[in-house]
Image 1 (tube, one colour):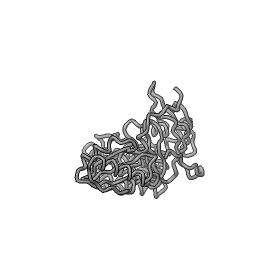
Image 2 (cartoon, rainbow, N blue to C red):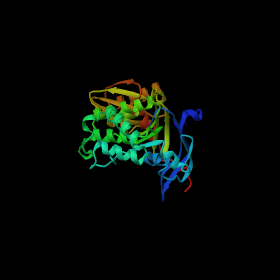
Image 3 (cartoon, helix red, strand yellow):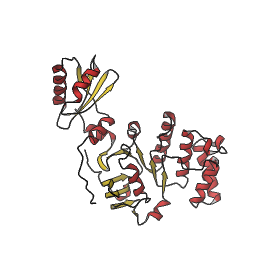
Image 4 (tube, rainbow, N blue to C red):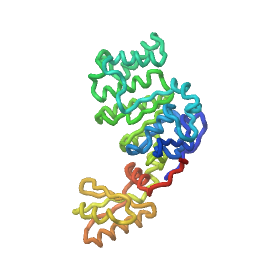
Length: 326
């Protein structure tokens, strides 16, 4: 499952990293990561907190020096050409980092000035963004009084005010409601359709499934990389659904069996992920035998894997020896 992205031509590649490592003292936060991010797509970074997503993004956009490895972003060598790169990228963190005591328009005006955009050009661009992100009736409202969804929308508008070729988003929707998240993702796909490459980190499965391509990080290592359908198809035959009148008892029976990676209750059913060695027939027989031996009754069927199954399969490995030298 840990297959690297195909290189592709440089014109079709926005980010290329090889052997990327980052140490903080004895902590190895990013360990020998290779990445190839296609241009003009939404590329997802999926992983739990502490997996190295934010650290990797900060190295890719030149905010953090790598301990080892090579990075090329938009044809520029990072960190050597990080200053040149900054005018071509946008960066949005999960924490709202704009000015609460400035209005929506004033925040946009300030960011435009920081980006070196002339007042005449900035006015036209800000008017355009106010319409696109539906701020016409809120442009004079203080940013600090906006709800989470509106604050997020303002942060995105500020991040793209200079029309970046590449947009980094670090857990951008962690504190907003589902409706705001859906609207936010619609805006991302509009940006991608217009030619912007987007790299977004998340720990939310439904968001990861929206991405054109996805990388999964675990304890600083890249453990999977591909389109969501590609990653799911690699698990074909290893995911089973169990219908039973005693889900908790069957759960206890299966949880300790060698060859079972996970057992999750979904309503009155159980979803089981079998280990790498099992095909569909082996997995089904293993489960049925264990349930019958425990005196329980259940119906077992093979089902299509989802992204949560992919994530569990990629991250439920034994501890790996660090690759990057201390």
